[in-house]
Amino acid sequence: MNSVFLGLGANLNQPATQIRSAVAALQSNDNIEVVACSSLYGSKPMGPQDQPDYINAVIQVETSLSAMTLLDVTQGIELKLGRVRKDERWGPRTLDIDILLFNQEEINQERLQVPHYGMKEREFVLYPLAEIAPNLTMPDDTPISDLLNYININGLTKLSSL
Image 1: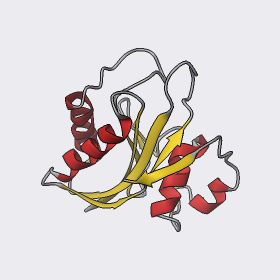
Image 2: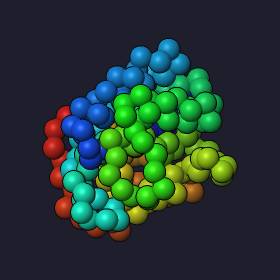
Image 3: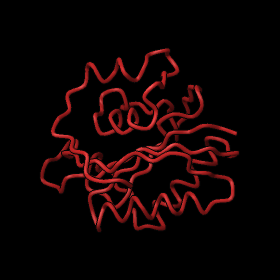
């Protein structure tokens, strides 16, 4: 089984409901077991500020799927829940599911980079991740607790349980 951390975010169409629906869709897959869920967090948008605030969470799953197959599953869930992929980076969206960590592997493919390329600079990833895996060490041997020492909380707010 593969141990995977997924980041979930949304800022359109009832974002908390979108995230809960995504978790339910993942759990309904026979090859995926959701083993831990962070709280929901409110965060300011990256990039353009003329969009609603985001709701974010991190979950841990165990899966027999490969990283690329899991990516296909998560992108299928995004589409099913109304995600429209646009060229605009960091724009508003109904749902975003990112593979943050896949075991302790480093993956550099055109469609997938693991660890997720921006996770070390994103408070809305690190704080929920540390909530469910406080002793986690990144593939480069950096403890998650060390990363929290260097990240600005940036208005991140814990909202409720997932």
